[in-house]
Length: 410
Image (cartoon, rainbow, N blue to C red; front, top):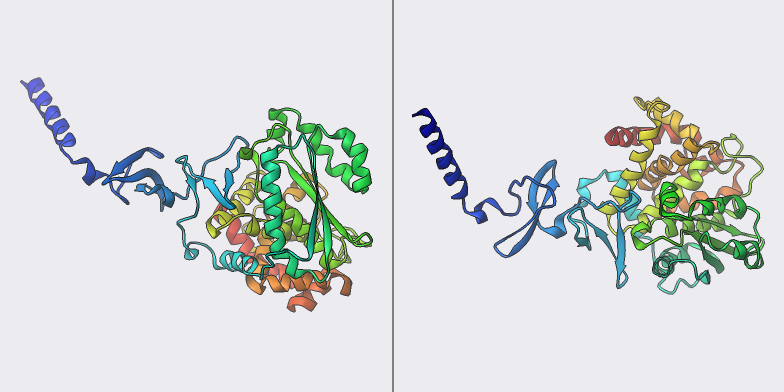
């Protein structure tokens, strides 16, 4: 008798469960159980996605979680000049649903300050000369060219003279070109070390193990009055492996060098007499590159966070980051790029330092800081002239933002 009662009860529960109308259970904002499952309710496409820490039915265009490509990075494409990002539900998103108040005010201010600088649609002060090797993937080359032109419209008004930029795109198959013809285009001994990474691009496995996005190196040579941006990737690369931060980052280096009269200095990074430090060179180029590389504050935020989060994972033991003093010590430590960890953090943590600077003082003050490089004896004096704080004072001011960001991502 007990067995019969149990079976009747189970059947009643099953009947009750299936009697709930599907439309009542599935609507925007209602709970769902399996991420990325798709449904249709009242002729509206929905996808199950995480929102405010919970799984909810969401319109595909409102999904803010992202897909991860084969190299561990987010995936982007450009359609008719407009950037799109692949969501975790495998939809190509044209925008981000999050509003500015969802992010730290410093982050919002930095992003707006960089993107709201005046544009010159003709990029009158910048002329590109292209040297694109046949081995370089054509779809990636096309995106790099278009993105570089777009970034140039922002940088051109910041220059007080016309310059030429030699844009060279190469792969691991171009050793003969690098050792021959390229030296006629651009003979710079500094490129030798920067291009050693090409040896890792021969297979997908080794390419992916070295970041999988390719990269670049860039500088402005005052004596020749031209800049160069040498972009490199594997001949096996696809748009899935392309990272939109690279072109604006490299062009930011050219901006730095043009305004400052080059990167050369008598004293090396980390020396109190130096004009340049690792986090200044790479961190600020990353902040600018991220802001100009991603077309809304949400994607900018995700990329900034992801890069630093990856570094935190490998550096927690060396940098405990419990107090503002710990943050100051970190910033001082990444003035130098004399080992792999400091070099990596000069980008990922350095970008937070310069995000703070630009968010607090504005991008105009960063431009002023660059122009003051040849007018001051060292980095600390330059800061004092530009914002009224010396090196120690600026680091102490930036430390709470660095600490808060680090803790949030930990």
